[in-house]
Length: 284
Image 1 (cartoon, helix red, strand yellow):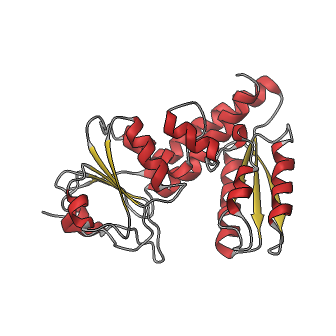
Image 2 (cartoon, helix red, strand yellow; image 1 turned 45 degrees about the vertical axis):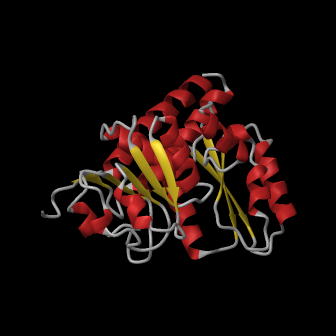
């Protein structure tokens, strides 16, 4: 088989369409209410990668007709100071969504900071309230990367009912919620991780594989079930995903590239949920 066997899942194109739809909704919201949807970003310290991510999100906000407010705090900020800053944004009626750029410094209680985000403004889907909503299938905000994965699966007409889905990774904002969302769509979900015994055997059973372990080329191509859908949510130095792309593409039916697959969808979902939050706040 050649590497052209698998069809690429174009996250860049889908993200572009999603942002265009979001921009239209934001414009209509502004026209009807006289208020522009607003996303507040909070950055602690000056980590170069985090600074770049925040600037990129601000640029995308501008393209989508979403106002951005940026709160920049010094690296030595305490948990109490960060919680106070986020609480102020949660109480500000002009702010519709809040994003805490993570990771924060090791001296900060990140979970306490996340929980200071009002659930109705948790457009990044990082609070316990959002996690519970995903688990119970209730209204709320999904974690952005898993939400982007679900939109990709829908765009490529992947029927999840009864399918065996294997999620490799267990982070609170990617692996765990991805499994919950897949389960909510009637997939049979297996969670695996870097310490799973005989991971290859589990991967070989996957009709749908979500790789989110953060280790380059961790999933071997020969372990991909023929015809499987492969979602690579990993991003490692050198634009390398968690899956051996060349090997997996010879066996999969659909596969996400890295970059250009899951990544663009993450920001697109963030923007879409910011407009959702603005609409819900005013009952639209």
